[in-house]
Image (cartoon, rainbow, N blue to C red; front, side):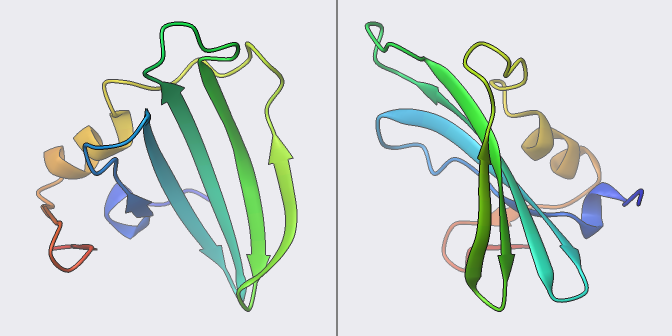
Length: 99
């Protein structure tokens, strides 16, 4: 199902920690699909970029599918965040919500 970027949930990288990451959250009925990627800031990391999909229903994890090593091509410079900003949304670190 195609969704407008303003209808997609998203948790952006908070600017701290050992990796740069973001999550896109899609909802279909009572099931949530959390698509994520993470880029390690450690130059010696064995697998510097990883990603996957977590499937949840009623807050219970049903599946966690991890991408094969080397198969994640998306990432920094935070493409989903940039798309939401371009659509006129602003993320509030205080509330954790897009406005």
